[in-house]
Image 1 (cartoon, helix red, strand yellow):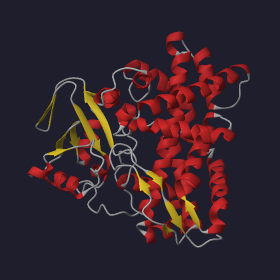
Image 2: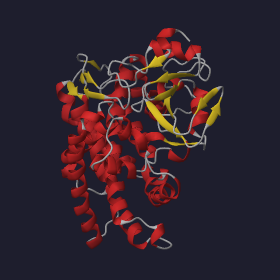
Image 3: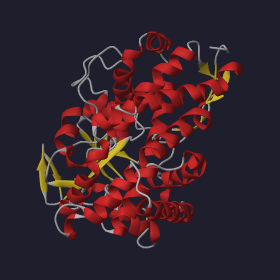
Length: 401
C-alpha cells in the first residue's frame, strides 16, 4: 500500500470517507489502519464481517474511545439497542419489532404523503427553500411524533432535543457532552410524562404498545421491558429516527441535484422512489461507517484482529466497490447488491422500513414539485465522516408548482 494510504485519521474533520484517497486505498487492499482500528473498504469483506458472530456491535465503546468514561451520556449510551448484546438486546428488540413491521409502516404512507405535500405547499410559491429547516427536519420529526404517538405540536422541541443528541455520533463528541446530556434530560423527562399519560389513557400508538409490553408482556418479568429500559428505548427511538432521516433526505437531494437527469426522471416516475432511496444510500449514506468489535482473537483474510479490536465498515467505499458493482455510477433505475447503510446481522436497523418508506414518498414529491431545483450556494455540511448530513442546504427552483 502506498505511504499516503497507510493510515486514516477518522477523527480529522477534513477527512472525507468518500474521497479518492479512500478509493486508492481500496484498490490496494481490502482494509487500511486508522486511529480507531481498521477500516474495511471492500464490499465482500464488509458483508462478511457485519455478519460474523465473532464480532459484536462496536458502538458500546464509542464514549470511552473519546475520553468519556462516566456520566449521564456514558451510562445511557451503554444501554441503547446499539450497545446491547445477547439476550437483553434480543428481548428488547423482540418487544419492539411488531410496531416496525413493513405492513404497519406501509399503512402510514398516506400520512407521509399528506405531510410532505403540506410542507412543500409552504414554500412552493416563493421558489426557494432552506431544505433542512423547512422540509427535512419537520418531515422527519413529525413522522416520529406520528409513529410514537406524540403530540405533533411538540415536534420543534422534540427535533431540538434530537438534534442535540445527534452530536452523540459526531467525531467531536468529546466536546459535546454538556449539550448531549441536557438534551437527554429534556427528552427523557418529556417522554416520562407521555408514558404516565398512556398508562392512564391508553391509545393506539407505539408508546402505549411498549407500556403494555413493560407491564403485561408474555412470560415473567425477565421477558418484559422495565420502566428504565422503556425510557432508554423511547429516547433512542425518538432521536435516532429523526436525526438519520433528516440527514439522509438532505444527502439524497444533494446527490440527485448533482444528476439533474435522474432528478427529473424521479419526478416523472414516482414508482422509482424506493429504488432511489437504495441508490442514494449506496453512494451517499448518512452513516458513513458501521462499527464492530472482536469478541475473540480473529484471523480474517490475513489480518489478525485481537479480542477487543475495532473494525469500521466504510459504507460508501463498500457500496461503490467495482468488484461488487462493476459500474458504480449513480443510476436510480439500476438494481444493485444490498447496501450497508442500515447495517446487517442482528443489529440491522430496527427502523429501516420507516426510513425507506418516508424517503420513498418524499423524494419523488420534491422532484415533481421542484423539477428545475438547484443548490443556492454551498450550504453548510457536517464532516464526511461519522454520521454526516446538511446543517443548511438552500435550494432554488421555479415557483408555483
